[in-house]
Image 1 (cartoon, rainbow, N blue to C red):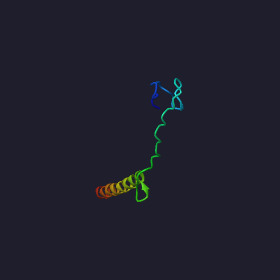
Image 2 (cartoon, rainbow, N blue to C red; image 1 turned 45 degrees about the vertical axis):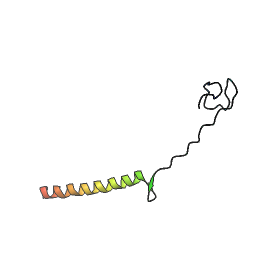
Image 3 (tube, rainbow, N blue to C red; image 1 turned 60 degrees about the vertical axis):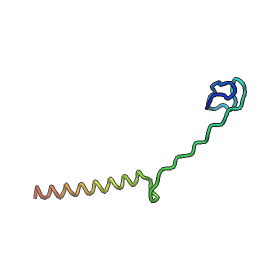
Length: 72
């Protein structure tokens, strides 16, 4: 909370009047709740997890194919 407009005294967050001069303090701006970013209805972190899964699936198949050629 900002200092008092009238006398410049610091006031705690929960006060609505200045404790020294009893001037009404300005109200802090309301914080809007943060909404997660979405792509096609799913959060971005879920898309990243799905992409990671498919990349790992592709990479593992490449290594298995390469190992079967070397061993077999």
